[in-house]
Image (cartoon, rainbow, N blue to C red; front, side, top):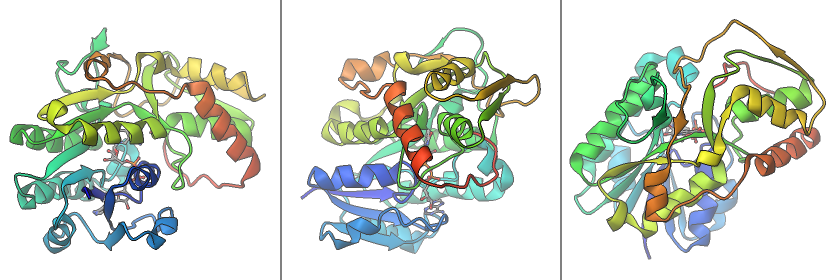
Length: 311
Ligand SMILES: NC(=O)c1ccc[n+]([C@@H]2O[C@H](COP(=O)([O-])OP(=O)(O)OC[C@H]3O[C@@H](n4cnc5c(N)ncnc54)[C@H](O)[C@@H]3O)[C@@H](O)[C@H]2O)c1
């Protein structure tokens, strides 16, 4: 049986990925320090193929224990997003970079790694379309720490690095700070949205498509290995205004465009996903479907959005 270690597996992405891995027959180990007290993985504790280590990627002992017998590592653990990293830059550096150093240093040569990198690594891009060759110019602590960790792993040759678009969609550990999740939340719960930098172009991926991309990497590791890939879809490149108007098709709310506020990562570009598509991976979930799911949940469940900036 193939054993997969997922660091940060109790998070927004991991909580959608873990059941998919179990469903496909993998043995799954999670290393997570549960910093958000998430109970999202509780249903899987009954499964003999599921193991949970409550520990920190900064702790060599915990990492050693987690790595034992793993065939692959999916590395998700991080302080995620510019606002969260800004709040505690030192923690972000320690977790996002030093945590990755630990995993890389302590793994054996045969243990392949799939790294959740980010489009935030591109930072401000001068006009045009972003490919994997576009120079990295990270602006935030988040972008810098993720870029440095990605470089370390790519230099080793034994990694598949995925630069993901911004995720959206439902997860048992729901992140309401993600742009689409936040806009839909505000429209449903507050009846209004204020948007800055409305013409800024962003690129999105449904969280279930992210999970599928990890399964794809496990199944095709030898063909993908040693390279970095943008992961998303050109059909999911939208301006913030376009997102707001798509929500307006489904929810009646007041929309106001402001001329204050700025994205710390200055993400304003279109992204090409040709490289991963040529390997055989395409996303499947359109924005309309993801929005319908979010709106249905927001209308049904009472959720409180903790105060934090949108990512
Ligand atoms: N969600 C997105 O839009 C997106 C986009 C691009 C890349 N990514 C990357 O995907 C990964 C997962 O993101 P997410 O949205 O699920 O974030 P998340 O914050 O929901 O999950 C991160 C998980 O890591 C755990 N963690 C944090 N510090 C840890 C530590 N020191 N030791 C062990 N575990 C620790 C947390 O408890 C949490 O469960 C991250 O690496 C992120 O950079 C996410």
